[in-house]
Length: 239
Image (cartoon, helix red, strand yellow):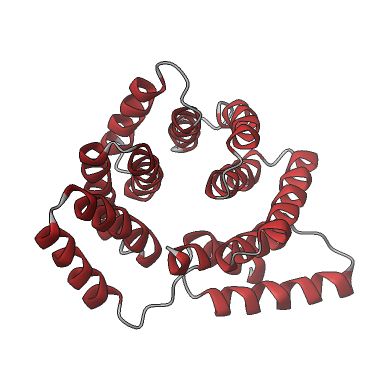
């Protein structure tokens, strides 16, 4: 239960010090009892991803995935793989992310009618968009519509923020603003300070580059007011 609670907090990026403490306590107890729990590996992998410890996060998430595979625990396979995909996207390892997407799509297909398969498809479409594959934009748009239909604001905020940051980098400023503002709206639904920060930063940069200085300044004021004193992930702080 300690491992499960800690991993749930870590996955959504909330109360990270508490999540880490719970997971380390669970790990200590499991070591004394000679037990293994994929939730510990997964949860600590999410904590290290939040903290910007990329290599350790990658190793822990891979171990969690491999343990879940051995146990034929498809749900935990999915959670580990989703976080591996997102980690590799965030550090620019798009080809590696695509390999994990292939695994994720296969596992999620065995999960019935939950959100796992649409989330897997959305991450796959995003990865192909960042790799500039043909027709990837159309696939990403279809996934965007599906995520809205199944009411999945957290994943919608994630894919739109990364796609917006890519559009900004490519000079597609109006598209970057459209995506970033939709991501911002979705992140506000789940009140996630990290996704809010990342979406706001893209919106600020794109508006500034387009000369929309009043809009950019408005976003800066909103960001400072909304997020004052909020703990942020390493990635959000760097952004």
